[in-house]
Amino acid sequence: MSGDAQICVGDSTLLSIDATVDSIRWSPIDGLSMPEALTTFVSPSMTTTYFATLYFNGMTEVVPIQVNITSEATLGN
Image 1 (cartoon, rainbow, N blue to C red):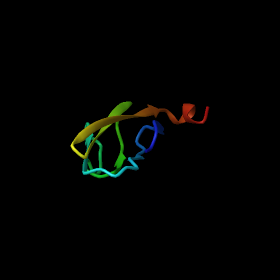
Image 2: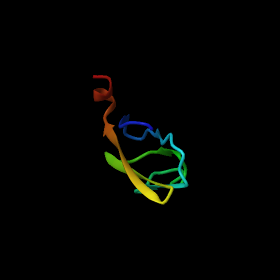
Image 3: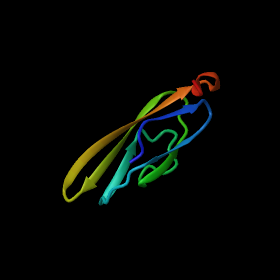
Image 4: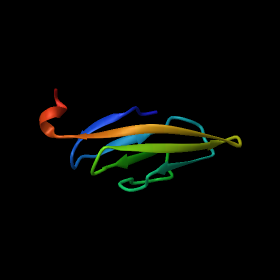
């Protein structure tokens, strides 16, 4: 599973879940390349917390991953 990420405005990052599941659904779907895949690229316009809802063996688990947006000047500090 990927952890929280920090990217610059206009960039994208990869969100991934390393799990055996029956299905997955990411939300919110704005800025997602593939909302029902274990791995998806995101390019949010502002800091966003994405939620991966995992369905397996009749159970559900929700995993939050935050993508923080920052300016290029502060990314390296």
